[in-house]
Image: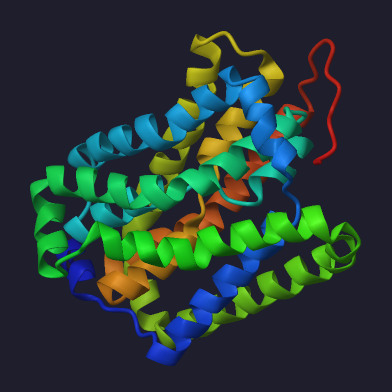
Length: 309
């Protein structure tokens, strides 16, 4: 298949399906927020070095290096913009579990997830607009869809910001209710999301098979870049090994579900973007678990694995 043909693919998703997907992502965010507490934010104020380095790698270094990567790799404009979209999103909710399995600082991971999720309300549309506009090829796509960062901001507030506030409020003011619904709520929302993705994949199976070979290498290199940036930044600033692992995984595990919602909502499921984000969602689980397994077999002195708060 001609690489440029990927940019002509538009993945099918009905308006009702998109509304349902938005609702499911909101429910997933609410379930994730049930694990968060105000102490996770206060911990950042008490010990800001680790989270500051991690968030700098997440929202400054990763988007910047992703922009450079799109200039080096032979990717199409829609694939390049898909990579920028993923890089602009906050960390994924699986990062906390993977950090724990890797023997990393789980408390730092939870704090970074909480803060990056809140910061994404502003940073995600900002990074997408800035870096997408700097690349001449992706700038054309942004102009064609007349993307307004404020529209992206409003969408993220609805499907990410509000569920985050409600989940933390439930955990704080109704802790017994939060304890009862936490596991079943997260399980059900993830299952429903997987069904949505499976339905979308089935409706677009032919397009997926045509394009997946073109994006696999790009996603592999992009994810490797994210993991490396996180670990290297933490090491350069003198963080201990446990914190390095937490930062690396947090930067390497992106919220690709949010990326997919934004792609379907604002870019009509543009082929290269959607397939990049979809494959990233699969690959980062594989790479994250691989790194966790590798690190779990490389113990270091004075490691005390922390349970997720």
